[in-house]
Image (tube, rainbow over all chains, first blue to last red; front, side, top):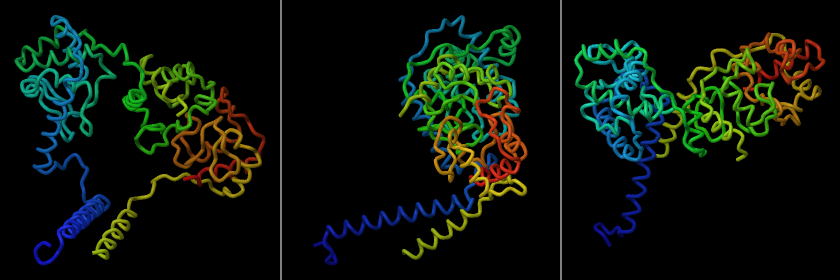
Length: 284
Length: 122
């Protein structure tokens, strides 16, 4: 018997019930705040200081824990700088700016706003920068670049960023002048097929914004036709027999098959299109 | 305690009901949705389409017509609005020569009523 004559096991039970009740009240309160619209999602309203710091800390630890698993491609330093600059000019400077160069409109209205890389490049190990550039940051404006830039291109970009942290305005301008014709390399290969990779691929080409697909969490969209039960469907876009070969053709160049279609050409690589078609045609 | 929770839940549900309806909801002037449902069955549209509420319409030859009032486009080519949908139902090959969807003999009234029914699919 504990104090006041309540047996210990009963005391534990009371504490348990109390905890569950508190959690329930918390969940209901959260629901009310969400559904009343009191929680602001606008990009002009910053997180509370403590929320911001926690998210920032979480990002650093999360990236650090995952970054070591990614294999680093071999790129010759002499090649890395021009390639990295090309990628930076095509895909990064718009939001991150560069020494003496302001980020453009797209990089100003975001919350969180894109970091100034002169500091990130000083603070973060190259491996971690590589990870963040390749995989992006969820619920921020930072996209994953792995479906847009080859691994060699991303590593070159990191190499360039590391150098950029020590560039004057004039140094950077020299790159823009001398290296204007270099192009950022697009991915040329894909990892071997897995269902998980196929889902990532479909999301990374934003397929889920127009099509609903089995096993893919995304918006309740009705822009394009639902692709649920796709293996049973007889036609692609109402014109082509639904075979894997045709599906790959359609995904890669819809206008070649149906000139008026509203489905855009997303410049899907052959390997990525194969993964998508295999996933969609798989009878689960 | 329980009554407080119920009150909170009720108010949450009440507040949730305040999200605005869809801004655009297609509607066919003078269409009879119930007649349309019967026409869909009699014209055997279900031989190719999944159509909720129409008996036997479970086929996946063509695209499923569930939630049709929410679909953005007709046949992947035209904005989904009443007059275009009626024209499409009446004569698909006239609008898209390569389409696998055949022209099914029906009156213009049938097409209007069918469109009215499809727009009731939320």
